[in-house]
Amino acid sequence: MKRISGILMIMLLSITACSTDDSGNGSGGTDTDAFDRGAMLAHWADNIIVPAFEAFEVSSQSLENATTAFVNDPSATTLSALRNQYRDSYVQFQTVSMFEIGKAEEIGFRRFLNTYPTNASAIESRVESGSYNLELSSSYVEQGFPAMDYLLYGLGNSEETLQKFTSGENAENYRNYLLDVAERINSLTAEVATAWQGDYRDQFVQNTSSSATGSVDRFSNDYVMYFEKFLRSGKIGYPAGAFTGTPSPENAEAVYAGDLSKELYLTALEAFQDFYLGRGFNGSGTGPSYKQYLEYLDSMKDGADLNALIQNQFDAIEDQSAQLDGNFKSQVQTNNTAMLAAFDELQKAVVLLKVDMMQALSISVDYVDSDGD
Image 1: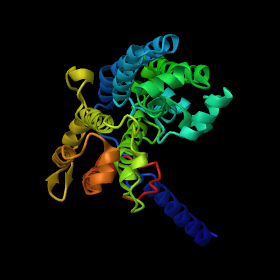
Image 2: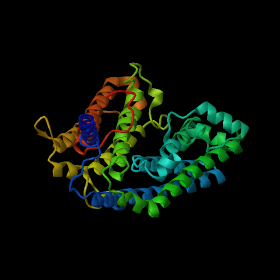
Image 3: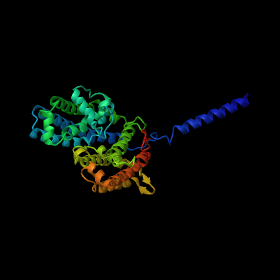
């Protein structure tokens, strides 16, 4: 009996030891360090995210106002003003697109505002029938900035566009649809901005846990995924045919406006890099950041400083991007090699961010990459 009890004791000790090992190092997101995550989260919220959404909310309201002015009095003047505001707001959107957390994630903010390419035939069908529901997830490709891109630039030249909205068949339906799209951009933006100005800001900042549910871990996954899926793949990879071997120029962002695509890409790239460095919105100082965190941890890769490697790669991406045409559709059609080169430089950064930075911060990657690393 004593022999059996001894054996049971050994078994219990072995199980306990295994359980302790399984919940410790190597699972990602369980290690802790003395870096002040709370201060970093507060800087992110108060000096970057909230001001960015507040500025974009002003811009989206201006977009709705310009759309209303055009719908009420379609003319060459109001069309020109609306197109200019559309371009400004679309560029401004790039400064908040990466912040898909909290209310933005809950309502599918980015999907509703910027799923492209838009479905032009579906839009025409909605306009013709006058019946649609932009709140449905199935309507992602029928609204947002890509839909406005089609309605403002894809119906022909300025005179032909005006004719569609004034004397053409379904002119009233075109006006109503355009206004509904602009109003929805503004209402969704206001919803996200209000959430950040309310309780969500405190929830975000106070959740300093180093677990998978902590704000740093969750946001970092969203942040890196944005770079990989939307900057690398969406803006460059898919139009260039990086995954299929077949270029798809029609998949370029702002495909109808044409010369806007590079500006959208560079603005998004700059906003992403500024966030990494901890730069406040619109240059309002710097604060705790991924850069500081990696420096604090003295993170290295193959004997080199990881933070320096990441910043050097950002510089390489910018240098290569200078070679791109302002119109990504025409870039793919005339010299796709440059687009593929841009993809390659972005891919190098994906590895540094998704593999090396996340490992250094003990954060587990929680999303699936169907395109490969």
